Image (cartoon, rainbow, N blue to C red; front, side):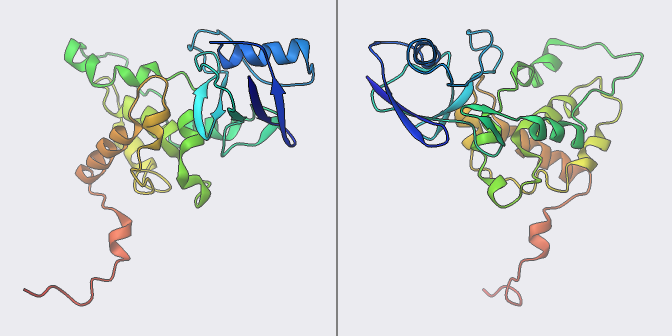
Length: 229
């Protein structure tokens, strides 16, 4: 079986393995063929998100993806490559700070019902793999977009009944935020935890409208002087 790995150039390797995960194949290549091959891994159980990379143009976790002959393996997009398949996620994590994606809970918290928990339960399953960040096409035109990676975390806190000031978070995500998303759904398709960032962003838009905000793109539209019937 042959696969190609994007390094400084696209390098082809051949391994005698069947029904193997990409992480196992990378380990075999590093051990027996090329010790300089660099990649990241951690739990090996699709929990930590460390081994996120792209195969044939789609984001996967190497520990869960089964390799096929002819696969092309690349690092994540929209982030600097440190070496081979290892990338620098610092800027992606910085967007969590810019979007204030953290909890501002009161000292005396209200009772949380099972219904309350279900509202944002799945968002808590995010493993910070960065797949959605890599898949998002908006970064090609706006590198300062807060992105699905951070906005889905904002929804987690905005929808939490224990939050002290969700309005502050809504205010923060108006610039380079909810209105910049194209709702293409690419983030949802690659999430290993089945989190729909697109849906979360749509709900944040609704919250924004309730707070008095509107899509700024409408203000720049020219409707040609009115409607005719």
